[in-house]
Length: 172
Image (cartoon, rainbow, N blue to C red; front, top):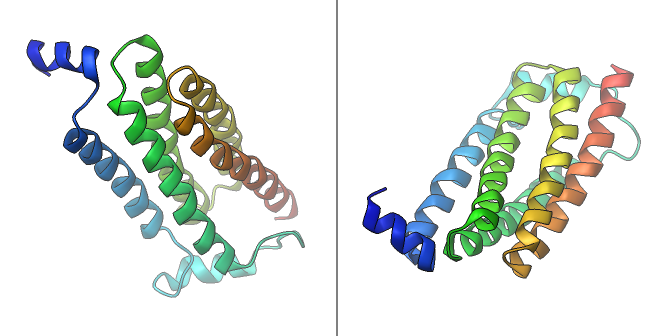
């Protein structure tokens, strides 16, 4: 970033197009990685493995995952965009950094769980995402209430997903 751009960011945050572009690239990369590892008919080996896992009775149906993630990703997009539009500073930069970390970890989790079949590592990663997700929500609360509100469902889902991942790990 040039000195002029950095000074403008500290005063006004990223421009609308720049904030939109960052959100699109980051969430697009995370979604592409998640899609690469999805247990759907386009990935029959992953699908067979996932279907054979012994899962707890409270495991949502496959369709629920397809319905929940677009909502969560929309929340992450709105939260990230709003944070990047805020004037730069330590609080904003921490919130954006934690947003970036969490969006990267979502895609990384699918790589661990579905592609590598690393149940223990994916459970640990899920638990770490709860911690970093709470950190993101707390950091966002110092910058933008809407970004905080959009983080809450994400963290709640991560907590549920961690319980689910741990139970799947234990049963398999």
